[in-house]
Amino acid sequence: MLNQIITTDTDLFLFLNNIHNSFFDIIMKFASAKFTWIPLYLLVLFFIFKKHKLKIGSLIFILIIISITIADQSSVHIFKNVFLRLRPCFNPEIKNIVHTISLPGGKYGFVSSHAANSFAFAIFSLLIFKNKNYTIFILIWAFFVSYSRIYLGVHYPLDILGGALLGSLISLSIYQLSKKFIFSS
Image (cartoon, rainbow, N blue to C red):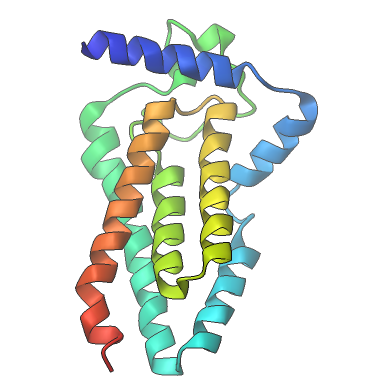
């Protein structure tokens, strides 16, 4: 059963990774870059402080940072360093047919830290704003950033799904644990 799941994941990866062109190479590399989304984070932070007082806004900001940090560190130390699943670009069976722009820092990819971090940010912030349009926007953003990792040849779809679930569950848990203390005042 596990072999069939891995085979299906690899087949889906190869199909999605094969859909590429030079224009989207630039877009997807930009989407995955470390500092690309700082303006988005600052804009969300601005609206958090606009919606909430300084004290509550500061606590929300700290909780978002904690959520992302836990998602990031657990994606590496609990998953990547335990499962040791080679990224597609390092998998000797397919690496010669994987479309890559640049190689990532680590050899292992399950789960995607980009997906975990993006979904941690998205889920926590959408729970704060509770706005339909923002929810749609931020989820599309998180999926886009996550998909860019498949496009760039550094993650399988299950790496993305695992990271998205991890980041979402961490943010949801931290939000639920903190909401009665922060939002009850």
